[in-house]
Image 1: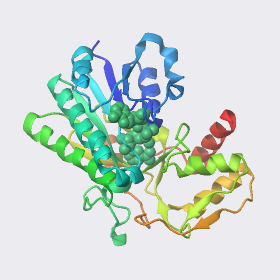
Image 2: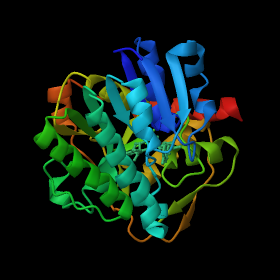
Image 3: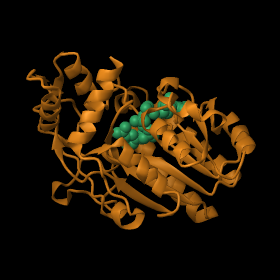
Image 4: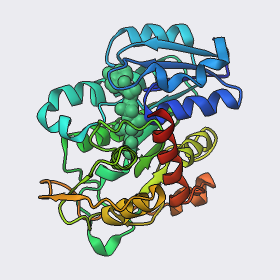
Length: 317
Ligand SMILES: NC(=O)c1ccc[n+]([C@@H]2O[C@H](COP(=O)([O-])OP(=O)(O)OC[C@H]3O[C@@H](n4cnc5c(N)ncnc54)[C@H](O)[C@@H]3O)[C@@H](O)[C@H]2O)c1
């Protein structure tokens, strides 16, 4: 494989497939490594138009075979997005979560180091890394205490420590992006985390949505195209750093619901159920460091991003 090749782990997933589209668009060859446990070939439909510029390998990142693949491909860059990305599953199956998110990630890091990858860009989790925040510190900067309160948060955080160690010990170049709540087309509405696509699916099919708790809990929503832009900028800036990739705006679940209902022209009331244990009350991350060092900023306004998701759901239903 040539010097302009990028391996994208988790490239058949929601965010990974958008990253793949963009890398192909700007001229890279892309090798997707995905076990298809959550991702799908449908997400790579646009990418497959690029013919042999795209290779898709069904492969578990925790398998030893990953090293053989990396040796064969010798990519210039690795974007590591493959993960067990379900917080609740990490609580019911902590070992399964760690096997992918810790052991699998270490396998990606070790084989990247061993086969001379120029830079590894990792998708960390800004929504879980900091745990329950000290509200006086919102929006949280990257220097806030890293104190995840779920097995998923811990497994995603462990990778930051491995990256820092490989950086210090071997000079391996990496960038870690602590993503806030990412939303956009291709997000799985059947998962736990995609509240935007769950609401979109329900509103388009005129079904009531469920809100857990009073709906006043806030999240920091960032549109997937902006996240992709942060990945691309990380190729040549910010080595050895962690960046929050976030809108730095708090939106309550109630506000989100009613904005989406307005866009869909619906007046359907949501159903409220008791709040779920362990759910954060508020979440908002400062994007100042990414703005300064990656020259990144979110460009897609919330109503525009939400309209695009609703259109995507309508088109496929
Ligand atoms: N969606 C968000 O809001 C968000 C926020 C913060 C961080 N992240 C991180 O971004 C990354 C992508 O998340 P997403 O929302 O696109 O999730 P996703 O589930 O759509 O994508 C993850 C991909 O990884 C693949 N995968 C899972 N286990 C694998 C394994 N053992 N080997 C190979 N591939 C495997 C899945 O099949 C899937 O295609 C993850 O690392 C996640 O932790 C996501």
